[in-house]
Image 1 (cartoon, helix red, strand yellow):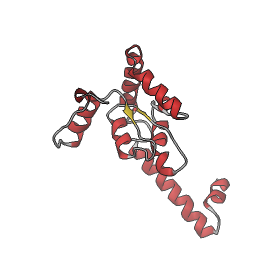
Image 2: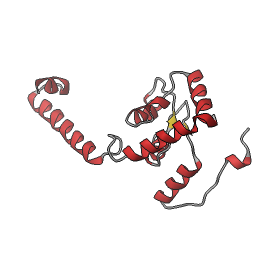
Image 3: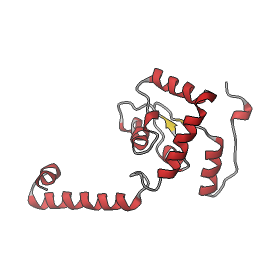
Image 4: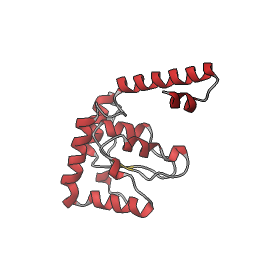
Amino acid sequence: GVSDEAVAFTPVLPKETHLRYKAALTDVFLDTFAFNGHGTVSQMLWAGVPSISLPAERIGQRIASALLLSSPAAPFIARDEADYVALALAVSDPRNHPQVQQVREQIHAERMTTPLFDIKRFVSDYERLLRIVWEAYVAGLSAAEKEGQR
């Protein structure tokens, strides 16, 4: 089981305070298998906390891995259930805490320049894709055909 000391309940806090609090209490976030964390994994990455995730078949089971791929926490994506457990055990080993801390610092340092949180890049890419889709529609082509013409 989980000890009482390992569980923390907090009052409702402003978002940034809430995220700082989570980051201070959490070494690594363990994502769920059946339905991956979406917003929670994003928030943990924003707070500088890596997540261990196991992608599966359905889109809802792959979101967290997609988020981790756009961050320095990509090595925390498990290949299978045994790998998930091995990763969780490895990061819980005090001898590995310096490496986990290094990943945390890297996530925090790079959060404004990674594709996941670079809003300007996201908007620019999204606008470019919308133009491609619109131009393809007008030309009677698929978006892939239109992109191939560029």
